[in-house]
Image (tube, rainbow over all chains, first blue to last red; front, side):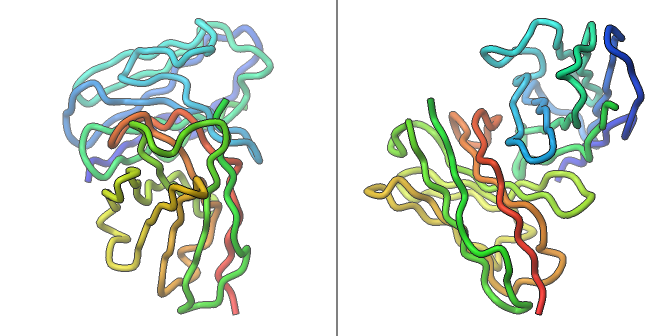
Length: 105
Length: 119
């Protein structure tokens, strides 16, 4: 299995801040890296798929980048609604695997 | 707009079998989508369990494959998970989700159902 490691595991930020979360893979793979937002008691929400493609309806302040073994999720200007836990996921090889999550608080 | 809803028991005895159902509303279950299960143990990250296509084709996580069966019922627009020989390590929140294709990003999720394994 490809192991996904997110850094940091948590971060403290304020409204308006630029936030970057990094996801590192144990093996290099192609572009099938996805990002999700998860709030307690609410269904996880797909933000970005295929490394950099925004899901329909996701604000443009979210951006994904990367290749090989290092991928990033950037929130350019943090909104109050963005305080949540974010997960990366690779779907390049089976089984799909998730990072352990980054809590933005 | 597609909606997914998990249902099933919240408590399972050790060595017992977990049976969960996901009901699909607002979308056909007979299309190009693959229907998935994901779980989250307490204080841990997400774990992909497996997925099924409307023709019954499945992909399973190898770590669970020996205990897992995912099935689909097209007339009722439901798909189900059966996980046998449950232990405390199987406790957590179980989600059903939709992927637009095989082994793809999951673009729609259910709210999740809490499952506790305890005697």
